[in-house]
Image 1 (cartoon, rainbow over the protein chains, first blue to last red):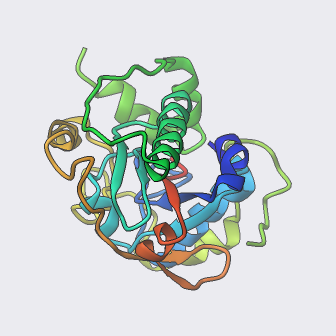
Image 2: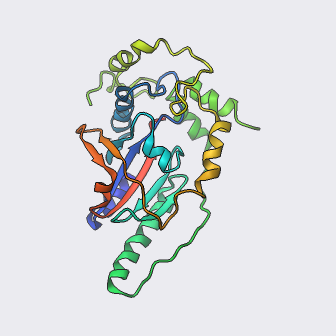
Length: 154
Length: 100
């Protein structure tokens, strides 16, 4: 997603990461009990994961997260004035960039007068990689792994 | 942010252990299995409890509608940033997520 941000920064596209609650708390990275803890974890996203985009912290009780759907890793594309152009339950960079390019083209062409917006819906697909996900959860602590893998429906 | 343990690249080492320990000093050792800290900031992930959010997602807040505005805190500066000010400058790609 940082790469997408870099590729489109010159098109007046701002890419931000809105920091929510911990989706998979564990012994190492726990649930948030204060904004200090939330800031600490968000700092880890910068320092450990290496995210370069602007990171914006939601309130402790997640007011923005709740209003936008409260899913663990959504991406939304919003136009000037707050018009929602794209909403996705998961963040798939390929899907996001496709939507972003279409949005940029559509907005440019609307100004020129040869394109009009229309509503559409589609189902998208993302890669499932349980082993990689298990590794990501493991960095949060054994509880995070157990809560997801041991307790999910078979 | 400064990191006390940030030089260690092990995924199991907490980013800034001393600061983290201070933040948790008043809430005990975390041995609260089964107890939810709050409805929102749960202690344990529970897929069954979170499933309704996925079911509702497609039926709430649609493309073509206006996004809600909220104040957010910039991690690097500590300043309050209103979401509407972010999209006032042009297109915004907003990814929601967390370290975990």
